[in-house]
Structure formats: C-alpha cells, structure tokens
Length: 118
Image (cartoon, rainbow, N blue to C red; front, side):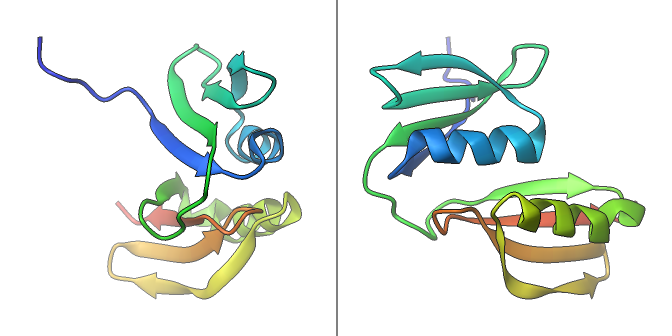
C-alpha cells in the first residue's frame, strides 16, 4: 500500500487555544485529544480528519492552509475570521482567479482565504 494523505499537522504552543480557533473558523469538531491537550485532531462533521494540532515549537511560514469561500461571502468571511482571533497580514487583493487575503491564526501561523471566480 502506498502512503496516502491523512491530515495537516500544525506544531503550536497552545493546542487548546488553536483548537477553539480552527473549530470555529471551519466548523470542525474535536475527534481526538491525547495527553491533556498535547495532541488534538479536528475533523469535519462527517468525521473526516482534517487538522492535527501538536504541542511543539511553532515554525511559522513553512506550511500554510488555503481556505476557500464564494466570492459573495469573501468580505464577510474575513470579518468573521478576524472576529475569531485571526489577523490580516496583507490586504485583500483581486487576482485573475478571484480574490485572496493573507491571514494569520492567533499564534501567527499563516493561512489564506481564497474566493475563486470559477
């Protein structure tokens, strides 16, 4: 059997805090919690594993998530994510494929919100 994609794991200083942010941002649920909150897995509501949060030394900028929404929800999603604790790192911009904004979660891990025109 060849390797298959399982989930994205992010090393974070505070897994519980990050779990709260990503659960609210993406409507995920905690499906695994080990050793207090050393390791947390967030899954979609149909129990597909999506994000692993592991207590460790964050190394920002090596991996980031791309989130997607519709063009008409783009501005509202930015406001919602900032309200949850994200920060805007670069102002939203229009590109040939749609719109994008570069954000950071509460610990400074980068992610993008994309709204595709197609």
